Each structure stands twice: as C-alpha cells, then as structure tokens.
Amino acid sequence: MSIDAVQKIFKTLSDPTRIRILALLEREELAVQDLMAILGMAQSRVSRHLGILREAGLLADRRDGTFVFYRMNPDLPDGWRSAWSLVAKARAEDPTAARDSAALSVHHDSRQARTRAFFDAVGPEWDALRKVFNDDSLRARAVARLMPAGLTVADIGTGTGILARELHALGCRVVAVDHSPRMLEAARANLDEAGASDVELREGSAEALPLTDGEVDAAFAHMVLHYLANPAEAITEMVRVLAPGGVVVLVDFERHDREWMREELGVVWLGFPLEDVRGWLAEAGLEDVRIELDADSAGRELPKTFIASGRKPLGPARP
Image (tube, rainbow, N blue to C red):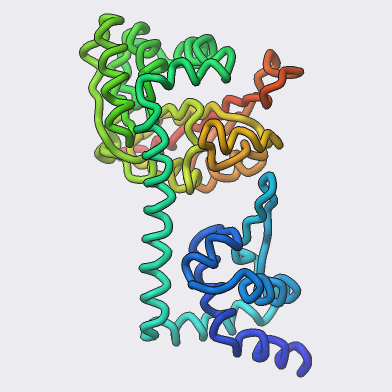
C-alpha cells in the first residue's frame, strides 16, 4: 500500500463524527434522517461526512423511493479493514459509543412504535383497507396450500387472521403472532367466526418472536416484511423458531415506486429486489431457496408480488 493510501485512511478516520457514523452504519442500514435523529446533527453536516465516507469506498447505498439508505461496505478496500479494527477496539471504552448505541436502540424502537400505532389505529378496519391488495385473500389461500395437514405453523404478522384461517382450514396447528393488540382482537373475532377458535394468538414483534427455538414446522410472513424496520433480522428470527427441516415462506412485493403506499398504508419499504430477499434467506442459513414472481400480478396498478421459501437444514445425522 502506498504512503498516499495510508495517509488517506488516517485522514478519513481522524474525524470522530465520521467514526460515529461508520460505527452506526456497520450495525444497521440508515437514511440521512435517521442519522440526524440519532446523532442530533444537522443534515448538511451528516451529508458532508457521508460524502467523504462514500468517496473513500466505505459505504454502500440503496435508493428506496425518495429515500437513500446507507450501510457500511461489507467488503472494505485494502488496508481499511485493519484500520477499522483498531478504531473499533478503541471505541469499546468510549462513552460516546455507548450513547450512540443507546440512541440507535431508541430510534429503532420509535420506528417500531410508529408502525404499531398505525395498526392499532386501523384495527378491525384493516380488512376494508386491505382490499387495496386486490387478491390478498386468494393469495393467502394459495400460499396456505404449501403446507401439509398436521404441521405446527407460525403466521407472523397475522393482522386480522386471513392466512391463519386458511392454514387452520387445512388441518394445521396455527400460532398467529402480531405486535398490535387491536389487530389481535380483530383476528380473534374473525377466527372464532370461522370456527378456528383453537388458533393460538400471541403478541410480539417479528424481530423478537414469542416462540421458542424449534417450536414450529413452518413460518409464514404474508405481506409483512415491507412493514418491518429490519426484514433480514425478522427472517433470522423465523429460522430460529423452525424445527430442523422446517420451511420459511415469504410473500411480499417486488421492488416498486408506489410512494403513495408509505402514506396511505404505512409501509416502511417499497418492496424488495429479489436478489436481496434471496441473500437474506441464504444468510439466515436456509437451503433450497426459491423465489417465484406471481404471474397474475403483472400489469396491474399494484406492484408484482413474489413467493420466496427456504428450508432449514436437518443438521448432522445421528451416529
């Protein structure tokens, strides 16, 4: 490595604000607005430091509608990884690092609270609002048929229980999870009316499921990921609660530009690139990863939908 390259590393990492930003982006993908809130800094200051870090090749970015999200480049240029390791060790005893970590947690919780508040406000009216998804009921029925009867299945983000009802009708034991008490109340009423009173309802978030390790044979997330702050973390949680050989099934929108859905439906993500979904499933340790686009959704005003799945390995054979 040349002297100029070494000097650039030292110069870039000599600023404490840039170190704080990079440390946050190593943990989580964030937009400028997120960094402003966590660090208590003006947009101009945050954007200037992001520009320097990006020019140095330390950041990757992703555009989502009108937002741009940044994260630390997982493949740092030569020399930077060693330098960053030294910085990380020094930050371990830095009280500023602890404050930033706490602020990130608070910010993450506030985003989850906004989503929960949206669904608490909508509650039983969600079935009427859900009609914007057009064939949501038909899709849930089709997805449910992926499961043989007799399995224990988790319906993550059950909402008003549309998928839980279909899974129950096929003879599955269903544990339905949602973070909104009002949505769970609506789900209970709908399930009881459909003769599915033995569906178990549990309150909890997709990123911290109220399920024990290996408790279920399959975990579904039907039109849920686009409401989550960290979809990859939720997929990892779904894998945790699977028994060996169990299956994760995801249904969601492919990447799109319908910005109105943020305001009217409270979504966090405007769909997902299929390669990102495939990567999340693989990184969570799943095998036989498959993704299919819903051909019937092409050409509609709404975005295309996909069905993605992966299987948890059985583990080493017993001697």
